[in-house]
Amino acid sequence: MPKRYDQARPFLTLGFVVAAWLVIPTVFKTFTRASFFELTAPVGVAASYARDLQEYWTLRLHSNGELIEAGRDLARLNASYDLAVQQNIEMQGEIARLEGILRLPSYTGFRSEHARVVRRDFSGWWQRLTIRKGKNYNLNVGAPVVFSGGVVGRVSEVFAYTATVDLISSQTVRLAAVVEGDTRPISYQGGLNPTFGSAGGVIEFVPLDIFASANSTKRLVTSGLGGVFPPGLTIGSVIKVEPSTDGLFKSGEVKLDERLAALTEVTVLLTIETP
Amino acid sequence: MLRLILILLSTLLLWAVSAQINHALAPWRLYVFVGALAVTLPALTFSLRTGLLASFLGGLLFDAVAPVTFGTHAFLFALTHAVVFNLRDRLPRDDTLSRVLIALFANLGLFLVFSFSQVARSPAPASLWPRLFADLACSQILLALIAPWFFAIQARALALTDHEANRFA
Image 1 (tube, rainbow over the protein chains, first blue to last red):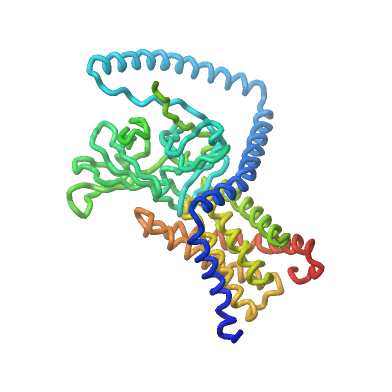
Image 2 (cartoon, rainbow over the protein chains, first blue to last red):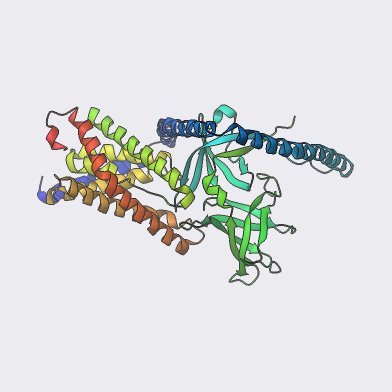
């Protein structure tokens, strides 16, 4: 083979490989992707179990005095939660009664599925979590994921015994939100992830009469529109709004909860099928 | 075939190590990418067909755990492989230091090309670059630190299948 063509041989081979890859059926690619993912899954799951074991042995080192103190605090917390549950039941009954009188469509019901975090994958390109539950717990794509501080994200892929969650700080997540106390929907999108800083997102289509700054933040919550997230869950704090270029709306920035970057357990909300 | 499997297993090990490091670095919003390590040794020592296949399959492994079009990493790894393979006769490639330098340049190229392919999805692309440069700096430092260990593991694994053990070492 002449030297000129010999030098191009790696690129010709690469071109052939790419051309072959492009004509391969999607079914084959989907199967290959799932296979490769399942090949890597045990590595992450084993590491997460090892971390849990490490945490267990660390907790075993606590003294009895500390455990008694923690138990007492927990008992107080349980008592206040018991009260909240009673109030909640009463309010749900009231909602059902009003829905019946006014003939309103009922709210979507959710059941909670707690899951341990296997892997955090927070690059500048995307922010994702892998959790230790998947098809084995009937998780489904698009299910909202929450924690005590509000929204975590939504399930993007479900595998045999793991699932991946796109975080709200990820640029792939976009949802309808409202400023607390207001009913007009705003578009939220993740994507601001500075090094050593809090993650954030951007908001668009903010009404002109809404003001917020770093000193006077506003709480951004889910709107409930679209039916994926229940309404009223905290997304973050609006720290900046300024008029957008069209002058019709404002756009701004949202600071997300710092705990999002160190989550070890999350809750997946699964829709309860109504008969 | 056995050499291909060994290279794939070493890529899996590389992915596992970097995944655990990224898990630990997440609270500081730092991320490391050392994908070029999976490409360097096959590109410098393997035949074109076997090396390209190893790099392509290694890329598919990275693709499977990333929210990108399946084949993106595979294509970039294969492209890097083709470039390094094309240059390998003109590069010193027998000592570890040269291999580390080649891996550093390959990783720089891979990181930047991949970033350009992803940055368009961001709502504020300009604000993304400082973060990406910080990640790139961390990635290059980590790569320089673990490359000799990783090449040694690959060489030892390949030596099991080859009587000419010095070829990879």
